Image 1 (cartoon, rainbow, N blue to C red):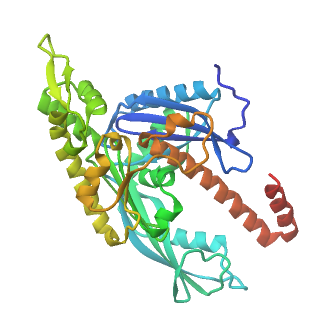
Image 2 (cartoon, rainbow, N blue to C red):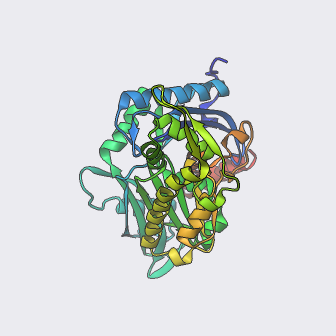
Image 3 (cartoon, rainbow, N blue to C red):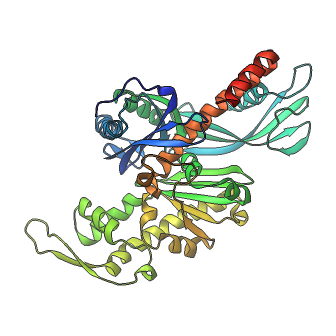
Length: 420
């Protein structure tokens, strides 16, 4: 199938998850209401040129991206241009700060422009020259001393403050992602922190409201995000994840990395108690040596300590947020390593909270839906959802700006979008 260049790219959203173990491309089309997504193509390729979530070889990373994009384009029958890309790595740092502005318009009514000015003010904070602000996420607003405000637009006041969560990344890491994507023939429309993307795919609004922690265990990094009262309160990334589990199997059993990855996926358990029936499986010998006999329980003895360590690190980050006692919805574990049998039980034993495996299900699926209903696609699906929400917010802000300046024109534009 040749890519169809005639399809309107304004109706297409593409998520590109450049992971340490895999590169995933997800092509979707929005319906006229932009409330549901039709999955057109899914591209998967083995990742090369990345270590612990960071690009270390541009040529290899470009080839991996091109392979995944080609597969997705072949399935979708279209040629993609713009992609929403995820970023992770232990270079990601976050912190809290506060910004303040005055409301100068004659009516003292707060508008989208005022909120944007407040967030732009937060971006003026001094950070090291080798870092760049990735996200400025408002926690809550204070208007004339009244705190706890989540949506200030339309309210009246003369002074507005905001507690904000700022996420920063290394400039070089961001530049290398842009360079790889551009060399693959694409344009980065947005760069999104991966735990934010994953949370869009596997968490619902009720969970975020009552308090929930997301743990996304990928190949090179584990991402943590904490939500309370519908607001993201803490984000972190650390470089202990699925690849360390595979390396442990390689070192203990003395086998190739590709063999270790295969048996981890086929026979791996994160908790001894989750093994219902122990069985023996064979691993081909290296260099003419005899095949190696291994049991599920022996493999679990290698996997479980590292998985425990990952959850201990994640729990330390959750406690660092200060919201560990407010997670009424418990913990959601997602990412490729969440597919290990017994992962949810082990996480519960370590963290002491209810745990479930997070599967992308937060949007109306169509097309190739079954292919992405897996924890390993959480980030890619979340990137698409982020792109969809960004387009919707842009349209809403544009309508609000028109309403402020041209009320009669606003009514026509509003009517147009309502009729879609």
